[in-house]
Length: 265
Image 1 (cartoon, rainbow, N blue to C red):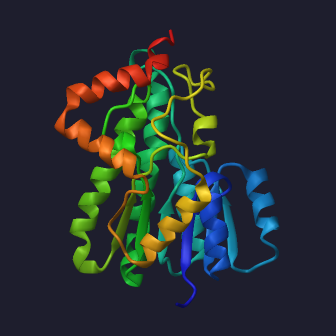
Image 2 (image 1 turned 120 degrees about the vertical axis):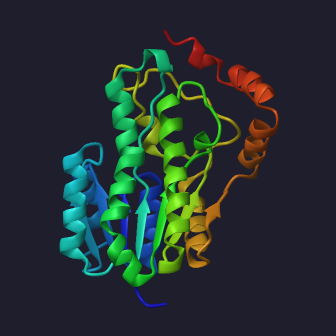
């Protein structure tokens, strides 16, 4: 396989960094986007001097940052084979105690930015018959207490790209939706509280917390096979069935499992 031209958002940490290392080792050309300029520079340096690495500092939580990222991609790459929408943000706060600006930021990073990047790169992706990879979440299928904004954004993300896949099928565009559960990344460490500051309580989880590197390998294998969807954790897939078949039972169990969220006032 010849070297591809790949764009990765949120590339400096967590799953984005795991994907970066794995794809760089395969010989691909990478454009790494992250809002943390210092960490991004350190990551680039750790990979060594290479013409295969380009970086862009951009905050995908605002319109200006999204525009900056697109401009950098177009200036750097004449061709785009893969867009990996990995950057994400979450919150841990009850819906009724969450400021609108927090919800707006979560929606911008988790939905608006992936959509605008995909549409802005669509001509290049059509030309290469390339791929878009989106990091969805189990929270896009089923309710999770204290994550109303995040659930909404991930649900919208899945719906938009499921539609885009169907519409672009004749153009050869491949869309991979990844639906993980809880992964050991910075997204939860950097979770917002309802007031926009850092969340003050630890996250609740269902099942175990997986590591980024094994998930990155699963995503790359799914990309190579041009799969439509990846469900890395079987237990979460079963939980989604419970939500669909017995939603009242699911909500009862969720309120017990995530009771700590109801205690936040």
